[in-house]
Length: 266
Image: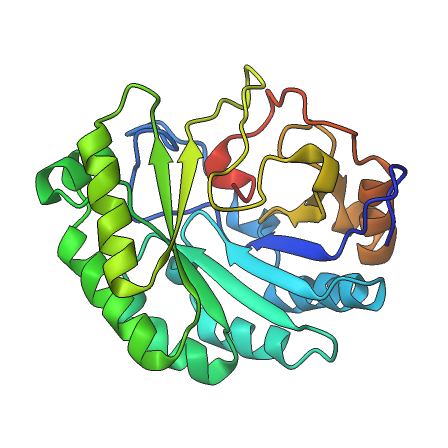
């Protein structure tokens, strides 16, 4: 699929839930979150319909996100269904790693190719603070399980603040080099202010080569993270919603005051 700026849209990010088992300070408030009603969350059958239509239109790369995708009941079954769609060449998942030790092998057996794991520090106390209660030991065990399961490459997503500790940043670089993980530094962004930056070590945030669309947990196909546009698959049908989103894809991101990172496939 080509958008109006001749970019080839071949990447679909799918949010399977807006729920998460952490409350990272840069992503979610500690409390008072307005969850999507369960009746509005797409079923697996609806997700598969969108994925199949997207692949028929040229998508060959799919990533599952959330919230935290591993808290969605039956996630291994969903991975297996997506992996079985002819034309899917790259199936990945972004996770905080808290449940990865349990799921790494079943996910790999179901057809998952690789994982991105969120890890903003190697310090256990700081990790617990940033994630509001996360256990860094679970992340390390999850990474080991992912490696043993053959999920490759393993990428580490580190959200950074420009005023952050550079020593911690270097520790992460050394950790990833020692373990053959691919490290991506992601500067803290703001949907409401429209502040976003290129990802260090990745291709995200570079609008001129953006090749992705996003499916939210409640069925909106969004052309851009920093766009308030969305085309619901229940209203338009999967194929039409995809085509409308591609047609509405902006040259560059602007602002988004109607979504939050945790419910928009960040």
